[in-house]
Length: 67
Image (cartoon, rainbow, N blue to C red; front, side, top):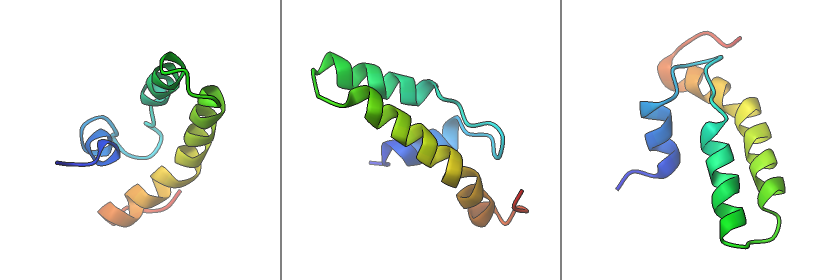
């Protein structure tokens, strides 16, 4: 079974500049529906992390230029 983030990267992410926040909004909604404390904060932190790291990692994985 592929991890959720790996599946997202391989099916929805098209490379640098294409990061969609929808999966992170869905994550926040799920956390809130479950009544877990800190749901919105966790989602914002995940988006910030992704914005800072996913493009760089994508370039390393694909041999692309860093921007």
